[in-house]
Length: 340
Ligand code: IPM
Ligand code: MN
Image 1 (cartoon, rainbow, N blue to C red):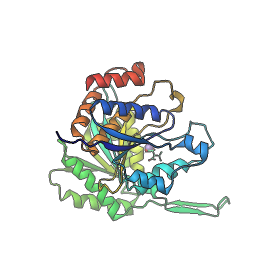
Image 2 (cartoon, rainbow, N blue to C red):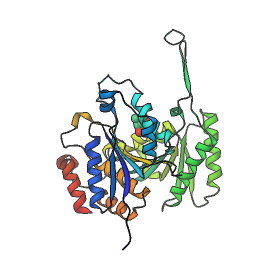
Image 3 (cartoon, helix red, strand yellow):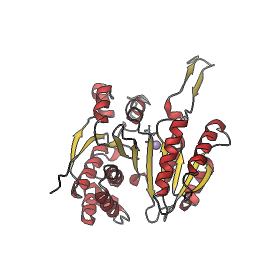
Image 4 (cartoon, rainbow, N blue to C red):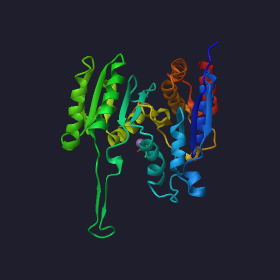
């Protein structure tokens, strides 16, 4: 008999509905026969409010050593002003993305029946460590009438190229081989030119992959009016952030959208999280939709090489026709288990 190793997964349930949806996802993964050894980390808004801890170097190093990280949601309730903006975003989420070099944010979308984008299936490959997120810039003459605030967009040849290469490799593995670069090259001429040249160069290595380009404003229209034109969208960090919320909305709601923060070079554990937030208003009511977390776990299983289990769960979740709101979290888990 072959020895099957269990995968070591760090679980950051986080805040609001986060712990409920990660529990649900882990239950589905286990019923698909995958052996996980999980370690919980208490991080997020609640933890910060309790003892001021966000994330430190030791914890980050521990996280690096896992096979994967599954995250629920991080953030205080809307209207709770006790945590300044950026403390958790920069201190926790972005610190993990940058510190673990999770340079790809992969967000696949498969439109649910009846949604605006019905019939479409595409993915956004978002650069995840650079752009305006990098933190370049600063403030001069703070608080005066002459205050100056700059926030630069950092685009390195290295960072753009590894992102574009990932997008082409992904597209090449699809039946519909197409990469659409989304940018604003007519205005952001320095960064845009770098992205354009890198795409043209990498495209030369993939003669089978069709290449398209759109300005980001136009892409917003196409995502609503003709989303079937896309297979893989590759874009920078901020455009990818905005486009993925729009993509979630037109394909059936952010309640279904999954994401993978990937370190394809595997020098740190990759992190898998639903795109939605902590939804404190429904936390503890049993009404949270766990499907985005389950789909994020599917991405995690693909990354862990559990291809068969990933396929089975993805198939059980696809075309999920039962009403999620009526079933509730546990009901959805049961239906997915029945369909496995
Ligand atoms: C996301 C989120 C984050 C981002 C925030 C919470 C920092 O919106 O994962 O899309 O902007 O990347
Ligand atoms: Mn976002």
